[in-house]
Image (cartoon, rainbow, N blue to C red; front, side, top):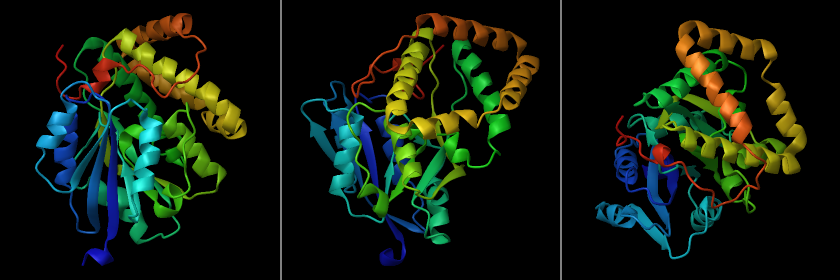
Length: 305
């Protein structure tokens, strides 16, 4: 029976994820396998210094394999290593500070492969968890306004480029994609796929939760990483990056802003203040594989207001 199903290896890079990794692993071990067969779950702990390794080791399931790096290598090197270790039909990468909505996530993510053999990459749907403080509520309202108007646009995978939503790579892709050093791995992978004319699809019903920043400092850390990543990507995929940015018409962005304003006026003006501070404090910095992480986004369910 297993030979008739898509064989799947799940890969998870991990660095100091004691707050999240148990939630993610327990969710993955409960996934439906009606049409897929999970061969193994490879977790590579990147020199974690908290209780991450201990928690992973306590998961009593033979399909979970842990590899511990003594020296931190960064997410890109870990993902390259995962790709080199497997031979499944599909590799699904998760970020450790995310969690599938339900036990049908993998089925929903990989369903198109049963009908379209030309698809080589599938992107899950990243959805923020409900906010737990005022700052997060601002970002949540802005995100919801944006999502309302762009989710039905053509080629939504170009809009929701995210490593935080679960991504499925076919064998054809993961045997050829190698990340270089110091690039934003999710965007680099997307533009590499686009440059090589790889067919891809966005899976709206394959929802994966993540947490938005809960403080201004964490927001700026995340935004600084995005800006640094765009500068790096511009050196590799300038034409593709410009086309992707131009896909958002001024009229569309105006509709998003007006909807945000009329539905949440206080949050809208608070968001404008955040953007003003961002403009003053964000600098041109070189992207790094070992970028500082925003702490509050790495605690899915534990942070209190």
